[in-house]
Length: 178
Image 1 (spheres, helix red, strand yellow):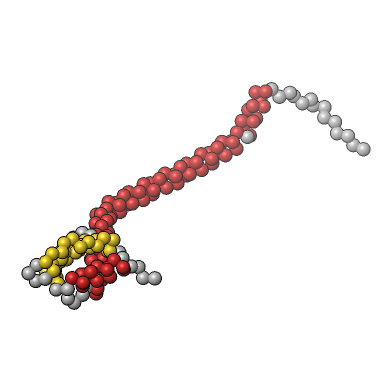
Image 2 (cartoon, helix red, strand yellow):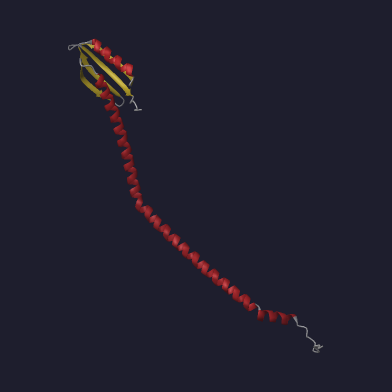
């Protein structure tokens, strides 16, 4: 058996020596790691700054697009308004045409018109006839079918050409196809 005996006593290290040993051996690793972290943060900051610049350029481009498209949008709104007005006018004309077609389809042959006046929601007819019964039959047909909300015989009198009359019809109801 062999024994190893160390007769030299180990000297106690001072705390200053321990600190110097630590600084010389381990602090350099800490500094390298810190520098790597700083470089990583620097590149990350560079990347974020570049993204911000790209976003600002994108916003500037979008602002330019908006500025360029504003006149087009205004013109499109004007055209839409004109189109709506045209549709409204066509709808009113369609209503008047339907009302006139309806009236003329029921109009007796022995009634003669001298004047027709078209107003916003009403139609006035002035005319004459030799047969007063045809006026009554015409009014009866109109009231039975109920296509107008208001049907008035405003005036009837005996004149030079026969019985002179004035009708007023208002608020024609367009029948919807089923």
